[in-house]
Length: 295
Image 1 (spheres, rainbow, N blue to C red):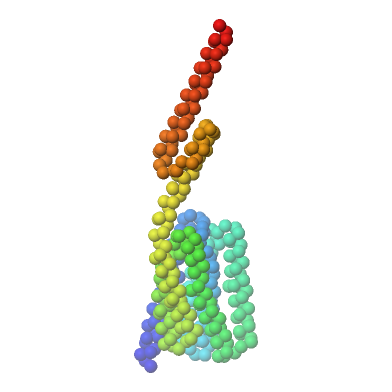
Image 2 (cartoon, rainbow, N blue to C red):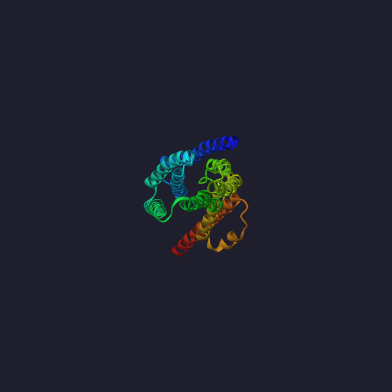
């Protein structure tokens, strides 16, 4: 029994340390937002959900304290987490575009304000004792899963843009590591509402890290593609010019395969020179005709 208590305390402390690192992992992201003065493609949803989860677990821990259960480790880390998440959200709202600011502020009010208040009032007046703890525990479980699932919304953006710029690897890594620590803590103290969501959290964290590894070098490859596109557009523009200058020769120019831009440019220049020479010859012939007519 003493060994179980020691292990649960150790995993609880480890969970606190790792969770603190999880809360601090987005600091580089928000430093980027601060430097650029814009939220770019970043999303506030993970931080809104994270704040709500911390608030729920504080309430859950306080309910357990009422039945003489030591939930200090839950209260400490989630109190710190609530402060940090609030700072993140405030910074996001400050630099977000007007439309994003309004939508995220509305979401924050509905979830973290109205919904949380309704939940507290209903559970305080409509449930008692163990039943109240079970109800709040299930709510905490659902939102713990939401915390792990929320960053997955970025996966679609990563797949579309082939860039992991908006999916920080440290966040995924520490979420996975923290899930392991909190699972063993919940398992050792026999708290189903803490242990179960962290099983899913571990697997989702692994998925995020795998996606990061797959796409982390994809952006460098894509950076060369616009240059090729610009080159193609430049060739097309040159052909349009040649069509205007030399209409009767445009079919030959358009049908030729584009292998070397230098050869295409030389051909166009030659066409222009030929047309200029023909124009000069035409002018000289016209002048000779005029002269002969006068004579």
